[in-house]
Length: 154
Image (cartoon, rainbow, N blue to C red; front, side, top):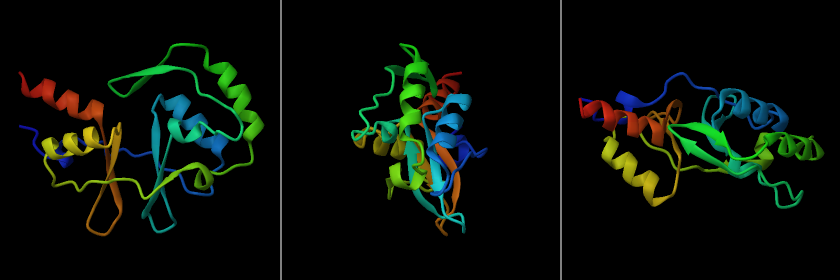
């Protein structure tokens, strides 16, 4: 029975640093078909999260293409090439300038029910999972919770 965050979280993490160029983060999001990445400092402590939402720069007028999320996969409803072209106008920026600072997190020993409640209350698609030292040990997505619910039906 999968009951805790640690049971279902993704441990195979892709992380970026505040100094990572936004272009690189955008490429990772697009290539991996994910919608967000934890941002860590040199000691591995979480300092923020960068998501597609963070990439909607009001200053540049860049609006990402409409998409839907289905089990953590991004399905674009229009051609993302236009978005990528507009994005190049904003190059030179770093992840640290666009990320959401102090993201909501969860510990690995919390129940999936608690995690789902936190995600629902804050309209989140993902929760970074931190150990007692503040190190990122995983990420829990809404798709992880749905898959765990589905497997417990068996």
